[in-house]
Image (tube, rainbow, N blue to C red; front, side, top):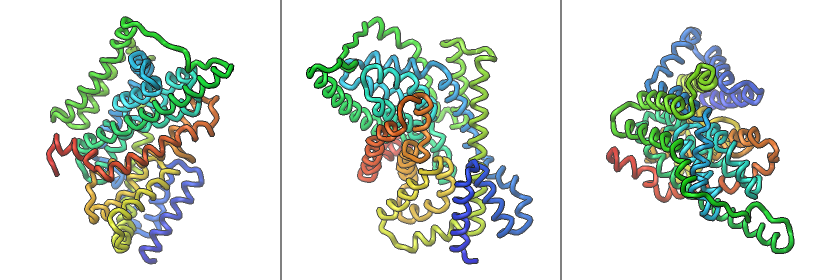
Amino acid sequence: MSELTLGALYGAVTLVVMFSGMPIAFALGVVATGFMYFFMPPSSLDTITQNVYEEMASITLLSIPLFILKGAAIGKSPAGRDLYSAIHTWMHKVPGGLGIANVFACALFAAMAGSSPATCSAIGSAGIPEMRKRGYSPGFAAGIIAAGGTLGILLPPSITMILYAVAAEQSLGRLFLAGIGPGILLVILFAGYAVYRARKEYRMALDIYQKGGEKSAYLEDEHFTLKEKVEMLPRVLPFIVLLIGVMVALYGGFATPSETAGLGALLALALLAVIYGVWKPKDLSPILGSSIKESTMLLLIIGMSLLYSYVMSYLHISQSAAAWVVSLHLSKWVLLAVILLMVIVFGFFLPPVSIILMTAPIILPPLREAGFDLIWFGIVMTVVMEMGLIHPPVGLNIFVIKNIAPDIPLKDVVWGVFPFLLLMVVAVLLLCVFPSIATGLPDMIMGAK
């Protein structure tokens, strides 16, 4: 059997098994094991556990459960609600300030928790009811939270970037720094759209009222005293200090990513104990249970994805596919467009973790051959995978929103996130035209490569 035929069979069997409804980790493991049985030496089956262990025995991967613990500690606390309330209190006078407050709260919480679903849940549970109470349309309220939650895999610390650093053999610190500029770019784009949309809905509400219709909550004026504003800060500032401290420890060279993750997790638990009184075993049990469950699930997917990639490499499927792509002699930007389109299609069905580990052996060699900076590409790929979190049919963040706001029709949620998908496309185009948005900060701090 030729390598091309074998590769096509490998991909087809993978799709069939995944569409059967089997969990992703088991689907990848079953396909990899099956091809080892039929197309590799019999002795290879005896080395499955060894291969998985060796692939996962990375000090970089150790940071994943620690960052998950840090995110769970913050996500299971009222920190998200307090953060949102504080930003709204200070920004309520800005046109569309409530929408902007949600974008900023999502960005800050994402940077602290490192999880898109956790960000959606923590900020959305407070933000969506507040926006709807003040007249914002359900679709817009849901869309801005779903889109803001995607920042969790772009702003450091990002579990997705950790995996990309391992797969592409790139500096994790440089990748984290490279995500800051594009993260800020998306925050600005999202906030700008929030202002535009809020003003549009305000004008519509005012027009209806002036024509004798019902007065919308949009037209109500809120007032907060300086005392009320200052009183909101004590519960928020410690977490901001935690975020800054973790970043300083990492980029200042004081700690490795794994040590930084451990430090962040311990400090987050300490802050919960001091600020919210969460220290008893019954209080910590949901946090630890959630961390163990999510870490186990994610690491199982990682392990099976790495085994899947190992089989692809052993059977020369990934090398042949990469050589075939190179032999097409596509122009640099056409190659990039084709690869990103492939990532978008994969995003219909797969989470970012699987996309990275399954595609990296195939797409990275042609990109390296074409002269692309793999740090820059990692950021562009991350933004594209963010789109997968808010578009059907999988769209994990969409279903998180449906869980916390079940009365909002799924159709409204989908249409609500559509403008933000377009803004992400704009961000990708800007990164292509101005790559220094991503590469400038790491080059300035860590030196040019």
